[in-house]
Image 1: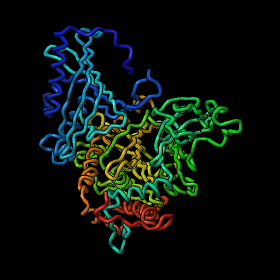
Image 2: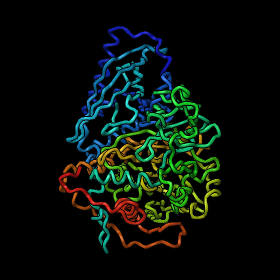
Image 3: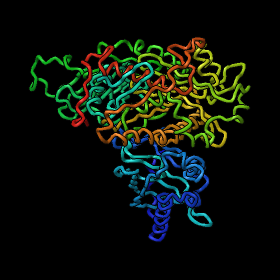
Image 4: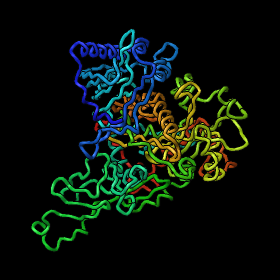
Length: 180
Length: 454
């Protein structure tokens, strides 16, 4: 799934750019404030979320990741069934790593929105810095480029997929179980 | 003072064993120089010139497939002025050229080129005197590459002892062998390098507590799942722990079901006949109706061959093969490498399901792993001071379990699902290296006074 060679489409106009940027900011707000019931409402049922294994390649023309191996590979349903459920009243007391919760903060910048060959489906890329504060430990941060597909449905925008390429090849992040 | 002390019904380990910087230096100079250490798998470098960079103990090395097809392990440093040769994590190259002055080495580590050799070093310069440094011994089993810096170390086969048989039960079952899926992930975990090994080495005691949420999510086969898998023989799984000598340990967990022929649940059924053929009777018994086998090859290689339910959709089931290594950075930080293995003769769909089962449970962001990490990092958090370093950790749990001699599995097999037998075995071996008893070569360890520790 090389991400190279599909950059030819021009960036969309300011109005669309603004709308998609606001969508990303809203999506981050829901993750950072752990409003997962609302988050799943703006995520397509076919959603896939993948973080490939980052590495330093031997050639500047190669990707800095291996997409035959992953750090995270989830669907909307598995995020609901295995991730978000651990914050529910019946489970948080036994979900040790979620309690006390790590405090995540997304900083989303450099949003680039492009049309795709399918009407109302957008190729949306952004840079993120995500910080994580666990208990009293110093904050750790992770830097990445996100490759999202966002589609316009009758009742609003939906996140269809997210592919996250981290800059750090050795992931020094306090708790990786987060939607970057 | 010995850090590991065993007296009649007491087994204690000083907390300095994890969080005193002087102990880490001691480990660096004993364990990580003398033990055989896991580096990677042959399938990571299939073609001549393929290489990956790793650490052997604390020192950087390159694993490279030579032109002759042999796997070589060479130190990642130029013989001339010591600069790192290989700066990427993996690649393919017919040779290694130092970016400083251009000394060039073959994939077997021979010095083949020296820039301006006549002007700088004269006519008599003999390149054959300057090959890349290499570990004292390199060997492999089932394609798993190990090396040691110690020329006096026993052979790998001797070092592994009975553990080799258990490795065979996991990696030796398939006609076409196993291979690694992609490049191993690497993560930093904020704790000492040993808790992962102590835990995966055989701690069945923590599972119902730490992983209570995984039970609630239906990831362990329950009565309804078992009914479909054969004749249900009881309500509880059968767990056994193994002291495989030399500090190597395993835990084997079986589903309470019975069938006429061996069943290797979670693996493609077309592989079952060859598994029975390739495994000996005892190994077949290990793999038959397997819930999981996990273990630790001393010091820092953990193995996890796991059957899990509901990792894809409710009721779905799959097996995965995880290997990790833990590399110390400081007393309270380590770097983990994560490999996912698959039988070579599996299709893309099965591999994807298996990798997902691994990632979602025991991968770097898996729900078992993050709950484990909460304990391991909490252990480090609790030792920011010096007073508590002088206290002990208690490891007496179940020290009277029955030794099972009927099964015929090698090593000492205990009929105990939840015990600290394997953790004590790890620490006994560790003590031989670090406390300076047994085979260790240094004088007994004397911890630093409290005020200068850390």
